[in-house]
Image 1 (tube, rainbow, N blue to C red):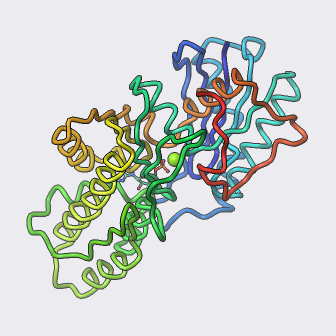
Image 2: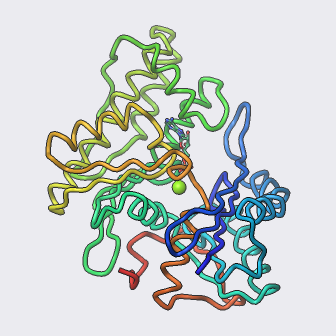
Image 3: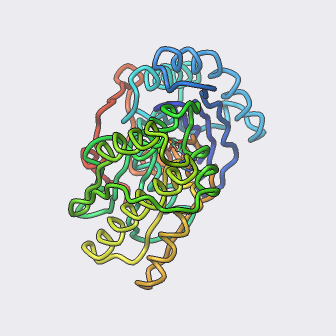
Length: 327
Ligand code: AMP
Ligand code: MG
């Protein structure tokens, strides 16, 4: 069985193709970026409309397949920015109708977890999901992927991107902060906010903006201190979730998980408690459509599908709203 998946929750429009052996036959994308400023919803929608056809054709070409070889179409139906989700859903509905393929709507956060589980062959991991909008610690318990910890305000990626925007860097800001952090040497004491298994970045954002504006600190030192602080917070809540859920596998997901300092911290934590740590390659950490194709495929095999007419979007769906009937 072969599934073609469409990702369109935020900055990335992607088309991925996977088979039921877990082979990724294509994982094409076009991501919206800016030189300065952030993510503008209507510009984002325009970007996706303009690139969707080319990305789809590229994916089929890469996989050396045509639509008649595709058994199922899946798309990211939730959660995400309405402007972006709508384009992906419309595209998915159109090709499902034209080519008469069954259609499956996927939850993007769960797709991160399932691709991590497939690639790592982890049986029952805790997922540290750190992306632009989402920061969650998720694990399977009694028929659902439950959120054991999460951000109480903004996502870690949004926090990094907001600070980057404040200091005049474009989107995405996380990789640029990571570069500056490598040149930082002095740790500046910053607010560290962990409440049980939850984290918060709002107060920290105000604090680092003020520190930057005061002109008293080197930007490299601020970036270094930001990374040391927020990644320690994420490592702490991941460890607490592993202990609380009595699990011994950690999987990373989300664009911020590309950060090598975060990877280093969670690897040390896992090795100290003899847990396994799985970090998929970067192209499967960031928003990508191969994960949507994979989740679509395993959901379809378990009997899930939706009529094109009813294939909508759900920008605010939470991971634990979805009943998991495929494991
Ligand atoms: P996603 O929405 O999962 O694709 O993740 C996008 C987020 O990841 C953006 O907020 C980026 O700034 C952030 N990001 C990407 N690469 C890195 C990196 N190396 N370090 C920190 N953040 C990153
Ligand atoms: Mg994501």
